[in-house]
Amino acid sequence: MACALFVIGFWCLDLSNNTVQAPARALVADLAAPSSQLEAANAWYSFWMAVGSVLGYSTGAIGQWYM
Image (tube, rainbow, N blue to C red; front, side, top):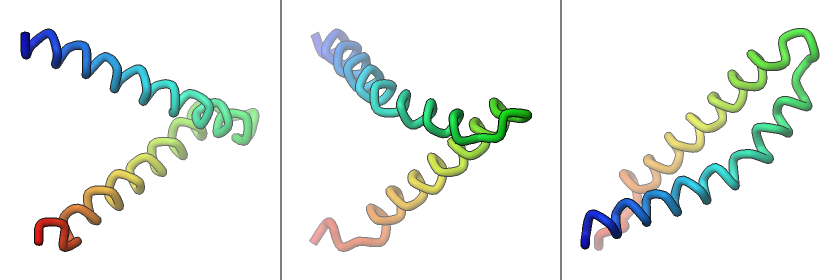
């Protein structure tokens, strides 16, 4: 039962994550220069995703969440 719940929950999380990221990826691709549109869009999107991940993990590690 727990395994089935995990699979369904993970699928829902993946679906919602892709739903949020798709418009952002399309916007970055539209704003990139036409000559290197795909490479630039992927590079910029990956960069900002990494910055967001570092900031998110940092707030959990530095903050006083457990007191």
